[in-house]
Length: 469
Image (cartoon, rainbow, N blue to C red; front, top):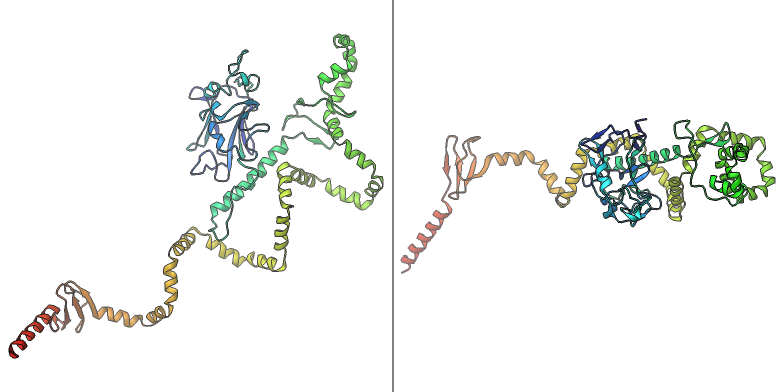
């Protein structure tokens, strides 16, 4: 079948052995899976996604996957940090080279050699190369091997972005939050597509390979306990057939049709057995069931049975959605929603939704505006000082022409200005502490310098001392 692509994964089904790169590496292009590596961790996206790799359904963990293991939904069902793929193991029993990410080329590189060289995935000999792994992690590669790279949320129990009051709202944060929800929805869609489908035309569940009409077995069925439970091949043979019957082809042929029928409706039998208590409750509601047959109720049920409605209810019934609704039903969440429903809040939200406000928020979200606001935030002390002295600032603005005129007529410098000189201009020479005036053609000193004044004062003091004897 070759390479298959879904909303969340790339699958070699099967892996034909002709696509190795660098001797024994298998390459997957993930550019269509919506994965943008974060700057601090290339194995986790900006919206909280990670990749999961499977060889014939066996999860291939990396050593560094230990950092994500606390996220709900990251580990496979039944796995813990000390039990991986059904065996007692630690993260050191695998390595970070079993598969890697090439972010520059948007590729996942699955390394066959590295996988078979690790304790957790190598083929166990009859005596057990890795004894606790025997029969659980015996990874092999053949023409029928199926290899899957799947994008999934690292933690399904909480959003990837947590917005804070009074923080700067960025486009990237909004995009990441939206992608987190979008990718969770894609996971739910793929999960629903892989579930056992119900055929409304024939009123049976069908064990077909998704997207094909190829029939598949139903396995992992427990031994029956009630009359309507599904039965396994082993249970049927060991319970109803004697040793002679098992070897008597005529007997076996006589019941083969019944076995085939049971196998064809095993899902229905299992479903009925699981609902035995509910069926008893329904039997006690004969009156209510009679009411369900009224014209209005029938019309409502017809609406509920439409394809769109059934699809919506299927989505609502997924584990993630049920978990989300359970969170929405908590007392705190209900209280918050009641607060949001008050007339004042509704009015405020309606105001925020007007086109002018939306346009203003879009302008505020512009990267240049965000940068400017950050600058204002950094210089808030200076802004506050300006606000305190706003009266003086306004006075200065009102007299800006006079201020500019003064700045042109009086200057301070270490040497005489050589341009923009007008008759009557003044400049203070900082080298000899002398005030000068421009006579229209040259600068001339006015009065004595500070040093000259001091000298004259000293001379006068001496003269007076002499005069006074």
